Image 1: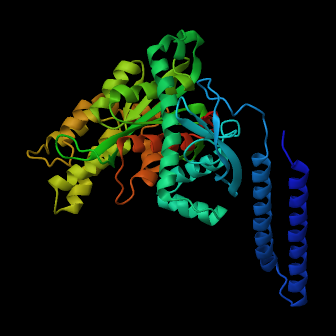
Image 2: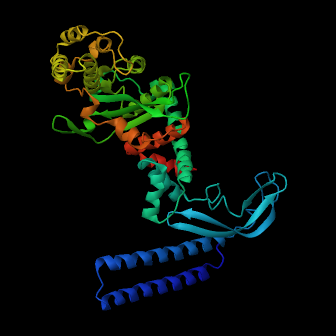
Image 3: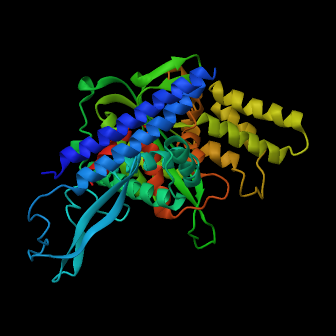
Length: 455
């Protein structure tokens, strides 16, 4: 039951009527002065809307402050009756439209030595942040979307007129990200532990035609944790899963993936593989005829593939091969650009034309000692991936041979938000924001909303 509801509504209506009349007067003044334009009336309308919102917020606070539910607040969860410790204590709840003022009594349990406000739990105003779930979602969304928590605060102030401290934005978004990550971790572990349920293998004659693509890559993030070598850089592993039936082709190189799922993990491959397997299972792994894995030359990728996707076609990402070949050529031809380009073209042409053995021979002829750590040993790289660079056959079968043909997933999902100048992440913070990023870029933001409203 709400006390004084008629009085609250009556007062609100009176204030709203006055505000709207003032808006009308302003419009007449603008017309009489010859200044009535779509832009001037827009500014006046904006001020009017702000004033109306404040009235509604006050009405909302009045309604919540006048809710009465008998003895419900007078008993602690331990069963003991609580005492009133303070009367008419004021608090403010931050909503998407501003602060809602609420006044309520405070109760205290002498046995548990804990207290709370009347109806705090029932009205969902408990918790240290004192914000609505709608505002929680807005803060979380902006915090993962723009390049920093400072920018998120700026955007919210500009768009909503509400000031949020960047630290508060970080805390709130990471708390939500933690819930999302833990939910996905549980699902991944369940799928990995029960593959016969998550991805039952259909007999070949019953499998659906088509291909399931799995792209994997890694990106280095600067963290606050040093390893035993003193480095603070950690690899964020990223996976992309989609079906060929969900791709719209735009020419030879441009494609639009209409349905896809990203997964990320900052840590060991032993955990990342669970997330990737679960995503593949959701996309139909085991029920689709072909599975194609595209990845760079990192050995952890191919070890994982042999364990988790043993029936998959393995393809070395052509764009990584191209990049590594060019970097190696700069090392062996530091002062001869013409020779460097000619040699690179020779190697890559051989690979693309199905002459893999010839390409290996060309690279073997240029084997060098004392290769810098930042340059791949190209001979070993190509030799170890010989069966993964038969691009002529792959292209004839219609396989994608590189992530560049689809999108730069790491740049889109991770780097644009998490690899800005000067950024250093906690391990957990990086994982939680990455989990939000993958949900957003997978068009699965509803999963985040569900976690917020389930709290």
